[in-house]
Length: 434
Image (cartoon, rainbow, N blue to C red; front, top):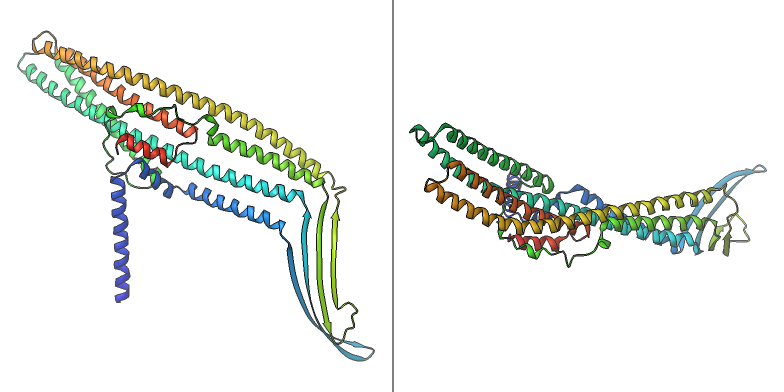
């Protein structure tokens, strides 16, 4: 009974520890921690990791053919029969050892090289999937931070719209404001409320997506003021070129594999040379054998003459596959080049927009202050104030979105050039101040 109770207590402690660690992990969720959680959660990563290990074993299997193949066998036989009316018994035992050493099999060396290429390709597949996860995590995480910044702006605008609506409502009740101003302020208030709800809904959806990527509940993420981010640190000058693209690297490895398959199939026309040796021993009192100890050493030369055209057909097939791999590689080059140029263009457009919207924000704030001052003096209506405030708010939204688009374009370049890794995620964490 004590043992059962002890086991139950242990299970409770372990469960509580797991829940607490998950909660702490979720509340302190950074980009790097999100990526770490996603790697542990993503089943495809585990599958590709197992496939990579399989390819490593296949290299060992291919190399094993270079070593001597040694076999041993033993036989014990007891025989009873009648010969010319006389019953006879024969007992004997034998054993043998054989050795087969490959001397010239060019296809084996080519198969080893092919296995190594397949291992490299599996490594690229694993790395590519990891970087794709890092890119998706970063994109979703940045969406959440962008929405949180937008919510702050929307809530600030909502608070002001509510205050102005209440003021206009009181004036309208006292016959100090006309119905048009009252209805206009009410419409603006509803628009502000809808905008806040839309942003909150978007935040909920983005958090759900982040949970689907990491497998953990997303708690309170760090507050990051987008306007305080030093975007000049996100420079593309020192980034790798398109030649480091993992997608292009996979296409190149597939092309090399197709070339190696042609070599392997062509070696089907080549002769093979083997060294073989054997030793056998037969021991029996009843059987007379002049070759009780049999030792043999031989060279075996095998020359292919005719196989019905199988090898030639296989060569033709692999050449067609090589052509397909070549076309696929060229297509991926074009696609990756287009994506690379698009991300770079988005980056420079976003950088230019940030500068413009920062200036625009200053102008919009100065305009809002002047309209507020004119309103206090009776020179502007409440609608003029709300219009100025709306322009200022929209400028804030556009500035936040431009900063988000800049970081997104920057991470897109990292992903295309094969640099979306732990090191750059840590740099983004530092840039965001989390």
